[in-house]
Image (cartoon, rainbow, N blue to C red; front, top):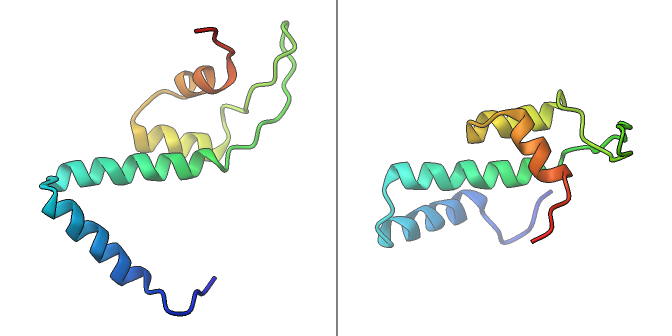
Length: 90
């Protein structure tokens, strides 16, 4: 997709520059990028109905997007599956 008058490279450099002005370290900026990447990948998870005893639908733990999210955030697949698919009452 092309948007006339927009330059992604320039805008990315502006965002990175703004983070530097706000005194984010390179490590903190990298963490922000990881969280952003994980959030973007969350939108790609395909929830397939896998019947369980409680008849709840859970995502396929071997979904490639789920694996990518887990690698980015350095977490186990069961943790993200449980937090996205189990109902909690607060």
